[in-house]
Length: 306
Image 1 (cartoon, rainbow, N blue to C red):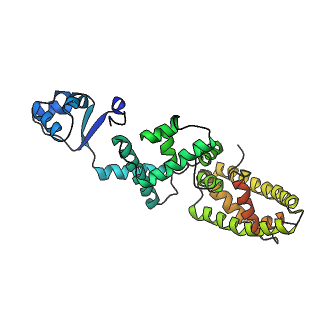
Image 2: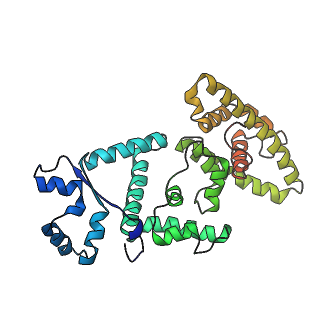
Image 3: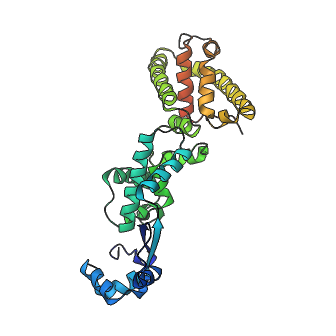
C-alpha cells in the first residue's frame, strides 16, 4: 500500500459477522481501535506490520460488528445486479460479480490484478492512448497503473446499462470495447441474448451477399443507399409504434430493442418490399441483416427518436 503511495487516502474496515464479546476491553477496542492495548499491538507487529506504522494503521481502522454473513451479502449483491441487468443469466452475473470482487480486492491491497481484468484494462488503456490522445500520465491510465478502482474501470468491466445513451456507447467503443455497436445498442435496449445473436447471424449472412453485389454491379452503392432509406423508414416506424405501445404496456418500454426486433420480424412482407430492386432477392432476413449493418454504422439506435 505504501509502495503504491495509497496509504494517505486509505481507510480499513473489518466487518464481523454477528455480535462481539461483551468483555469491556473488547468493546472499547471495537469502538475505537486507536485505544488498542500493548498485547494487540504486539500481535499486529507479529503479523508483519512495521512497528512504526501501528498507530497510523489503528487510526484508519474501523470495526463494524453485527454484520450479515458473506453468503447473504453475495446474494444481495447478485439480486441488485439482477435488477440492473435483468436480462442476464445468473451465471453471467456471477462472472461479472467475481470479476468486480477480484478487481476491488486488488485495488484495496494494491496487489496484482487478475489476468482477465488486466487484459480488459490494457485494451482500454491502449485505445485511450491511440484514439483519445491521452498519455500514460493522464487520469484513466494512471488509475489503471496505480490500481485504483475508478468509475472508468468499473464501466470497462461491466456490460452497458439498459437505455445507456448513444454517446456513452460510442465512448465504450472508443475505449476498447470488444463488441460491436450493434450489440451494444441492442443490449442497452434490453434485447435478449438470442435476439442479439439472431441479428448478428442475419447480418453475417447478408454481408456475403452485399460484398458480392458490390463486386458485380457498378451502381451497387447507389442502389444500397436507396435500400437504406426504405429499410430505415420501416424500422423507425416500427420503433415509434413500439414507443407508443409502451405507454399502454410499460413492461414493453423497458425492453424496447426486443419489441422492435419482434415487430420487424413479424413484418416479413414489409421487409421484403423494401428490397424492390431485388438486391438481396427480396429475402426479408437479408434485409433485416442489412438493418443490423446500418445499426453498426450508427444509423439505427434500436429505439424511437426522443
